[in-house]
Image (cartoon, rainbow, N blue to C red; front, top):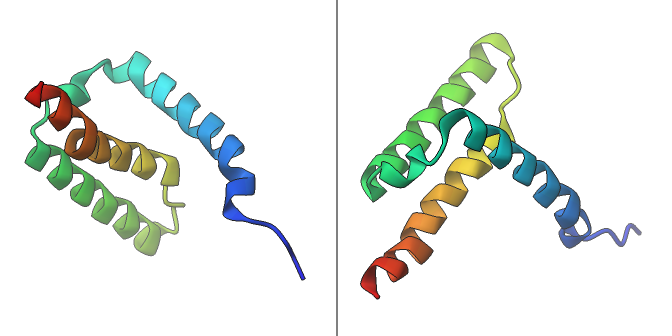
Length: 87
């Protein structure tokens, strides 16, 4: 029986996500900070739908790191930035 756990891959995942974030930071800067909570959530859903449409129509792989990045932005907005704004 395999004893692998999802946490075994966490360091590799964090490194890949960090690189994605750094690359996009160079390209887009801090534009994500200027989106409203609703705007970020709608953008994430639209991109999710677009990526899956591309996958089903043309077999282009879903860019999971980009989706994780957008989910991170939504999570930051919902859980951390709102707390900072309340201080």
